[in-house]
Amino acid sequence: MKGRNSGQIRIIEAFLAIFIIFSAVAISANLPTKSPNPANDSLASIGMQALLQLDSDGSLHVYIASGNWSRLREALNLLLPAGVSFNLRVYDAQMRQINMETVSNGGFNSQEITLVKYVCTGRSPEFRCYVIYLYLAVAK
Amino acid sequence: METAKKFGAARSGQLLIVAALAIAILIASTSIYVYELTTQKQSAENDSIVELVLAIKTGLRNAAVSALANITQGGQKTVLAENLDTLADVYTRLYPQQICQIRYKLPNSAGYEDGVKLSWNSNNGLGVSSVYVPYMLKVLAPTFNATLNDAVNITTTLKVQGFCTVGENETLKTVNLTCMVFNEEKQAQAKWIAIYYEDDSGAWIPVNNPSITDWGNSTYSPHFTVALASDFVHVSVHVVDARNILVVANTTCSQAV
Image 1: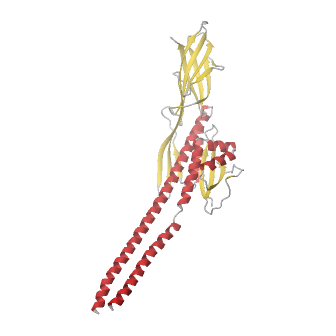
Image 2: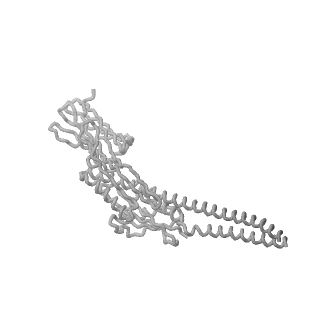
Image 3: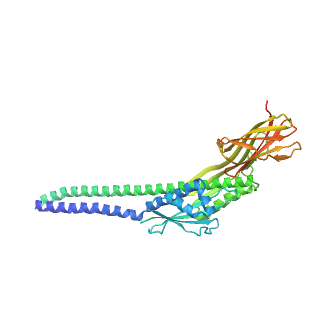
């Protein structure tokens, strides 16, 4: 009697322990899907830093004011990490799109697109404000 | 029966310990995981707020430089407020939820009038073009609010010293000047230099093609020859720096001893 009961109880204990541990793992594994994607945040940060760097010496404003979209595309290609797709749109202060030419390095294959908003200002005596929408995605 | 009771009592203790351990591990791991996620989210949010603040500060600075360039070249002093309002308005429209608010006050003290100071008329060889804008930047993030009190100070300073030497013909005087240009008290490059002298009738005459030596350290040495009856020469130096800001300094060049 004693030996038979002892075996049953141990099996029940083992099953219970396994169940508890697996439920913990299952709950933990489901948590990331409910949280914001840190990759998106870092992509936004990378995009913002690239625009800030371009703006630090005034070249961002120069490219926009002169409509030199190819140089702007090249500069972003250099500043953004490889494997990041971008598409840039420039608007004036009244939100009218300025760039009629596409400033992009290819189509987006990713479902997750990050938008970076940036306001670019000039230093010339005639003050100009441009609103930049930089769409970013990790190329797959 | 007694044996079975003893057995049950002994084993239920083990079961409780195992269950308690498992639950403790579950709670601890979940808590640590949630904490790490929150930290990552907070860190990413802080980064984006810092970058937004940097972008706004750059914008405010550019707006001030643009206004000073405009004002020194004949524009109205109201241009400064117009530029700042334009920038604040763009940010308000870009973030309608009022994520960032820009408030500024243009000072009317210490030589500043509506945030602008143009000190060009003193005859001590010092000229100053400056704007000063204290501002408050409020950033409202989902998890925290940040308030930044700072100021934009854009100042172009010109220092001029000089003397003149008299040639064989006593009316001909060679003027030697030393001009130094500063942006916010740091050495800066001049983009354009023009020199005027006051003739015997009191009119300011531009010096045509003065010889200017650029020493490369924000110091320029112009020299030129003029025909004047007086023993000294009143000189006015106009300099436009690399930011398109004009500054004027006047000095009197006496004969070198």
